[in-house]
Length: 297
Image: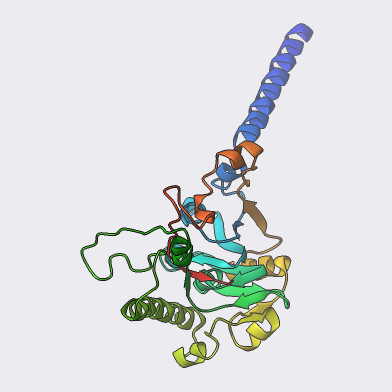
């Protein structure tokens, strides 16, 4: 009898150890991303938006990752950016708006050091905007610039030969000055993008269009000044933004944050990365590209 009891104890203990090993193995193999799908508690997903906005796909992929997860009640945008491409900013703005309206996600934007131009544009789609009193906020406007090297070609006795099918096909060519018609054409494009920016701010911040236009001249403001002008909602730090997000989402107690692991950049990544976007000339010669940007310079 005693031996039989010992055997059962050993078998039971072995089964418990095996179960514990399986649980630990699962915890090690399932990262924080997948763990969010287990409804242990309500969580806030933190999406970091840092630096110049050169592309939208990586940010949108993060935003969409848990759109159907019931345990992710809210998204906190941790923003430190001077803005970037017009279309990039608009794509992220549209996705934030979709998650709010179609997926009923609570979204709060927090500006740490900088939330300017395109970064401010996309934040206007959030439920609330929080910034430090000294944060740089605003820069509502559009800019387009490129390098013109016509004088350099003339000095080097070189000529750029172009065949085109219409007056504006090579508008913005860096090898010659702009014509009056081209200047009007470009200004028309920029003016339309500017109107789109102003309308997005007006809609997101629930401000009159004229009220937005009064501050939409490219100026930046401190967070404190921006609050007085109704460009942001609250003054606070990151923890304040977390608390505000939790309250809006109806999360009781201390909220748990889910932050996707940031990819570590190695020397090999730097050496193998395409840096052409950061250089004003392409590999075929001294050809500059025109970029329309919501960017604080």
